[in-house]
Length: 187
Image (cartoon, helix red, strand yellow):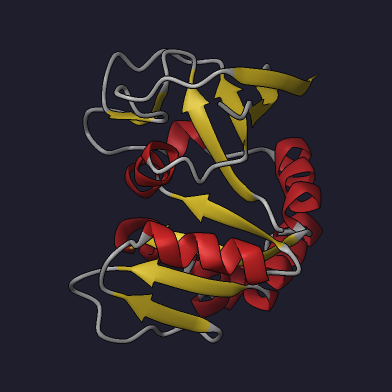
């Protein structure tokens, strides 16, 4: 069975966006981005909400991003090679290849995807990830803590879920970002 993995860049106080919806303070430098690339090579399917998908689809729709650096080009290839499932009630079609739209997040369907998958799945977007956490679907997560306090905004982790975790690893980066890798302990 494949794992469902959540990864997020978050402020030290636990937000993926500030109160104005800005997240550019979390943009990874080359060192962090290269590390993320290596983590995501094992991902066969990305699960996204509409907003996260619209943020990420530029890795296919904007070729200038992959021209910025070898690391960005590498990530564009990783992203384009994976399947994408977008949960949205408003999107009717997707401008990227290997992408399908589902109107509702269905935990049984995601369990079936995990059971059938040969590669791990990744869930992106804190709201969608919160649904997966509540349903007991998330197996592991990587939290990249950015050295900034933003004081409020969109939370990286749900506030209404309690889980026992096992630390699998941590990695500090030169610019002060710290990666924490956890596994959810079965209950």
